[in-house]
Length: 116
Image 1 (cartoon, helix red, strand yellow):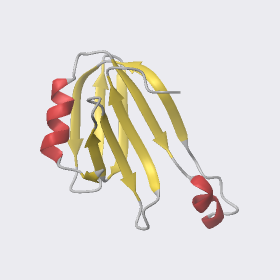
Image 2: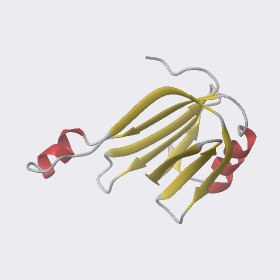
Image 3: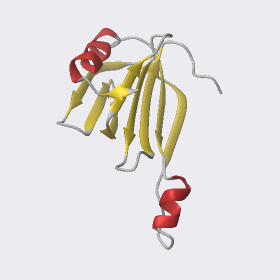
């Protein structure tokens, strides 16, 4: 993965609007966060192969970035994104890493289901 180039991510988002796509969205807290916040609840979220169709997709910010996908009846939103890749399968892979390189958030879009 490489640091986000907003024009490339925005071009992908524009290209795939109004198409059925599979979504992977995850926030990670991992053991490093659990150790850092021993007595606190560490929130997380995970969805894999959510079938979506968005009408508008935008990337915003100056880094870290946020991506919003406006659907007919709601929104999908991820914040803290720092890196991206459009892989050999044509999937958009977005990730956010903290200051020591730990993955904190992932948002991925694909025309085909992700592996389980």
